[in-house]
Amino acid sequence: SQEEKSAEERMQAICDLLKETVPHYDWVGFYFRDGEKEQLKLGAYAGAPTDHTIIPFGKGICGQVAVSNQNFVVPDVSAQDNYIACSLTVKSEIVVPLFVDGKNIGQIDIDSNVPDPFTKEDERFLEFINQEVANIL
Ligand code: SME
Image 1 (tube, rainbow, N blue to C red):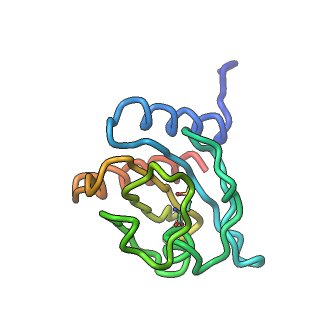
Image 2: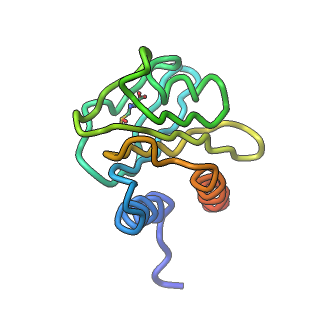
């Protein structure tokens, strides 16, 4: 069709929609792995601009997920010593890796201004979102 949207535009729409529709999602973004540089790079996001557009593997919650390939739910960010603060209003965070053909290529990262809001439902929901994203990449 004439109105074919790019993957970047679709990911932006997903970020905007998630932030607007889920009350406890205050910042929503996708980071992508660069294996050679051993760092993550920010892609589409919705919410306040962040200084942390590049995150080395192992650093912060995002950097740890780049290495562990596992979901990371943080009910209270102030209890984490390996954490990168993007905004002082953020109380909690969830990061779910994005797999394409079984390979970790990035992640969805969500910050919340609410303490301890993320449940198993958020994990399953964001895994589903990431599978849908994987299908358009
Ligand atoms: N808090 C993240 C950094 C990214 S910002 O949340 C957008 C972390 O600790 O990795």
